[in-house]
Amino acid sequence: MFVRTPAARTAATVTAVALAALLLAGCGQDDGPSVGTPSTAPTSAGPSGATPTAPAPTPTGAPSAAASTPAVDRQITVTIAKRRVDPPTGRVTVSKGELVRITVTSDVSDELHVHGYDLGARLPAGTPGSVEFRADQTGLFEVETHDSELVLFQLVVR
Image (cartoon, helix red, strand yellow):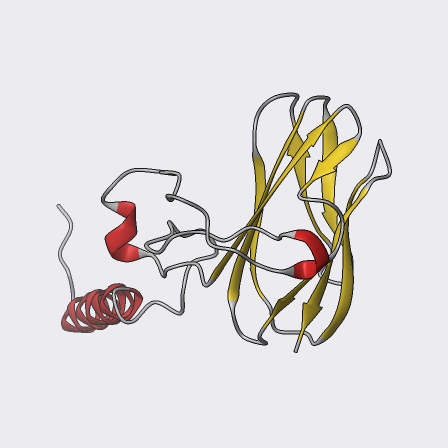
């Protein structure tokens, strides 16, 4: 038979209280997950870095995810077909602090890379690949594919 001493009961109670406090602290305010679902119409880079609004957002993820994740401030969509970049290579300007999502669809398997932020994504042929990040560094950053060595656009963060 096991008998707990008063000191053992006190230690168990302190441990239980500490565990409860940790669990409650974990349920507090979220600093912002790295993956989100856009709630506004995405934009894509146009010629000379212009950013026209796309006709309609493309759903990505479960509907319940939109309620718990921040909206993307800037959606940049690029398509590669027969080594041609659409929209044509140019500059896309975003403001420092914006949440940016870059989505690329290529007709051949490749890898997307965002220089300076050192982010990448696999691009299976015909399947969109995305990177999402907070534009927290100012400057000029090339966004390219690794295998085909295509410059998709230059990202300007101001």
